[in-house]
Image (cartoon, rainbow, N blue to C red; front, side, top):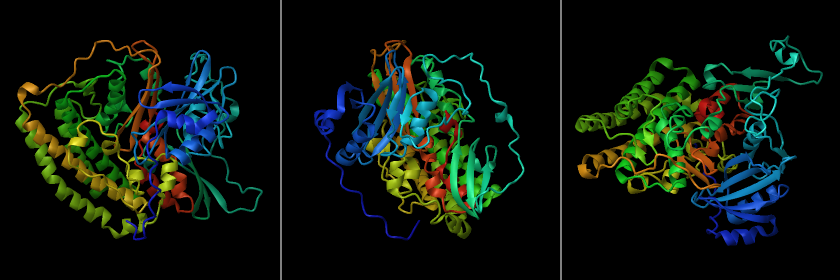
Length: 556
């Protein structure tokens, strides 16, 4: 944790404004109105995106561009910018930007929100909308030679992907010095490298020993998860897939993101008993995910595989054993159902409670070990304090959330700020650190394990005393869900890595017409150049490790 004085507090939040007041503020920029389930929608001209986003950010306090969704209709293309406030994410607004069917061009929002950079590149890559004034409009998930846009209506799935011969050229060419007099060197890190935590390719330019530029090359693991969900039914076929996004033990958190969106869209009330079970299971997943994050981070920083990494895996296994008892699976849980959970706690309940309490009782001693071995380690402190610095306003501009944002002093947690489940009935604290560096992000995760343990213990107390006749695990949900045509919603939960959101639009059938995943890792990874430029290569590796990304969620 940095000993420097924290930055001054951000300006006070603007008071909540009604939909009509926002329309008046935007004035002639608004050419139409829409009502989404989560927020008022304002239709604006495609050449006025920056003016509208800037007005909402500067004059109305909407400083969090949560997600950009692109889709195609019969008569138009459309981009939707989902805006929130970091101080109050329940205040939401959608900026709807239609684009011409024959020439889908829209102004980029990147000049106002840096997070729009990657989101708009993805929209261009998969849907085909071009964003004018975008600083680097290239494909992001698919190769540059890809033919067509996979989520476009006229996409030919059987079209051969013809790649020019030059694309097969040997990348291992002889070293050469550029014609310019420069000391820079190009260095490939990944895509198959232990320090990249998955198939991630870092195109790194070094000036001497310092990082002059770094570009994240993603897409190696792209699995068309959104398209798969658009082909599945709300009620039965989508729920198994969220486990596969962030597959680092965070499955129940992923499932909750979809469940929350679908339940709000279909107006389903989840029984209180099931909400307590969900909350307990989600926090067990958070502990398991953070344990792996801490262990791999130590491995990145000083290569300690034998002690710290295995200690973390040991405690992660204890959490996974409890999750296996609860769900029947160790990784791909598929435990949530729309309206509740698939089954009650395992019998005998007393053994399950005892096993869980034993785990919670051992955690404080385990965390002391981690602080002795990791956070108190002089080598790790030298490597992480004041490296990978991410100032709070920069974190906000990139849409950073979760421990990455909270490690920069951004007090933002959807469990408290946009309550769901049973979180608002329990006693726990949001963890923040003001150091803004790699060390602060490590401390946030270690301290969040303590808060998760507090939440789980309170859930166990509630479940032990819950009357048997009131243990309802599922609401009465129709076998087939068909939300009204053109119903739109964006809902999010606090995943292990940050804000995990789902946008859905219905077309009156039992399958979503559009399904968009807002991955926290996707937005958090955008911040890497801000952390790494000017640092040394080992600091770049530490910064990447501190982000705790998982490529299954970045690429989707």
